[in-house]
Amino acid sequence: MLRKSIRITNLLIVGMALLLAACGERETGSRQTIFPETISVEGTQFVDNNGRQVILNGINVVSKSREENYLFRGGPEFYANLKKWGFNSIRFIIIWDGLEPEPGVYNEEYLEEIDQRIEWAADNGIFVILDMHQDLFGLKYSDGAPNWATLDEGKTHVTGSIWSDAYMLSEAVQTAFDNFWANKSAPDGVGVQDHYANLWKHIAKRYANNPAVIGYDIMNEPFPGTSAQMATLALLEAYAGLVYKLTGELLTEDKLAETWGDASMRTEALKLLSTKENYAPVIDALHDINHEFESTHLQSMYQKVSHAIREVDMQRILFLEHSYFSNTGVKSSIERVTLADGTPDPFVAYAPHGYDLVTDTEDAAVANSERVAFIYERIKEKGQQLGMPVWLGEWGAYYSHSDGIVPVARYAVSLIEENLFGNAYWSYDPGTESLSYFQKALLRPYPSYTCGELLSYQYDHETAQFKMEWLENEKINSPTMVYVPSLSELKEASSYKIEKINNSDAGWVVIPHNEKKSKRELILQF
Image 1 (tube, rainbow, N blue to C red):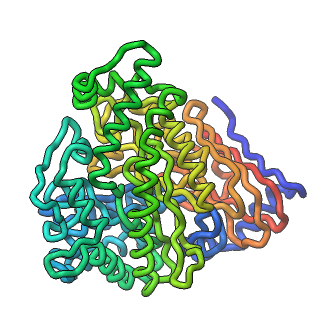
Image 2: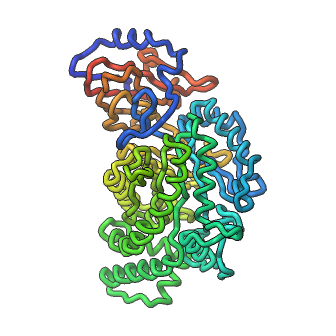
Image 3: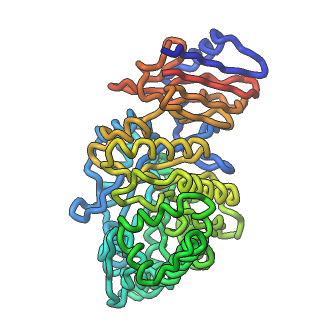
């Protein structure tokens, strides 16, 4: 069995005894000294009120059921379990239909239920990002907008072999999005997008002084509308061109439609796109269409909503998602929103989603590593270009897949760690904690709060070793804290200052701050 070792290296070496003594001087009972009260943005980092870099490690909490009043039914014990599992944040889904059932009429009962769940989260040190969710625009076709805001002009709704196919096939869904982007009038004469901005203002005013609510995810997976028809053609033409280049086979329109309209045939076809060299030119065929949508309609909506929010809340983080198409690696064109005076809004984060093309199919376990790496690389590049922290608001969607999904999940987690992304896994269902991928990939040590700049971290499942490096900020008088799911498995645990989570084997390894600026390293062996 490997012996656990810890190395904390500094430009000036300080003995372990002195370090532990220093930690003892700050009583862990005074929780304000080690646990954050608020989280914000500083440059490309999420930071807490102590100035430490924060890794947002979260999960989506969601009910899309109108019968459940769009509320996940877990009570206080559920949020206590989230804490035990190491989640310091959640992406909490809220639904427009539940919030504004009639034009300009807000559902106070629903909001009070949301208040209660935010309180349960806060009681467990969990921060909340509120996400205005939609799938296929609204309730009429899936979830999101109320029927009064779904201006589909009576167009035909068509579905496909996968639920999300309707984005590309349904004229009704596409038209509803078109009219939203055009701000067409709702039944009361007010623009439907104006209603959306006013709703966000109402929500922001409610939570402006609630430290547990750290931000607002303005819209889930914004979709362009009827321009998707051009996107479909561009994608199929690019794929056919690749097939011809590689094999000499000339695919007919009927053959292409048959291949991409059937989930199993589509998965087989995707094998041709298993390298970056093959995948990039096909997916980049959507760039111009995506750029046109994001730089005009989407950016305009984000600016309108951000102005509405900033009228009542200047501090919460605005989480900006890229378009639906960018989930699969299409370069995004969104930009930072500005304040009313035209200056850049400092409290903004990039909130992409990252999914392989086999997501939501029975073949999710054959997700292609090179494709996934390419998607995450594009996300990292966009975050750097924006100069914002990156929060992967959705990834995974492994649901009840068997052990075969574990390598896929571990690889995705390794990329999240490598790129220092914040993240929220999609999503929690009752019993998720018992599934293999949760136990063997999601549940792991990670640096929750770092006293300085986090340079790297990784948990190696094969060797059961956690390693992190950071550049200590000597001006921050708070410790670095590493979440550990199983303290009993930590070798020589008595060597560490430990903060346990009640009624569990989980907790944090607490590394006292150093009064000298230095590069530090921590290794934990399990």
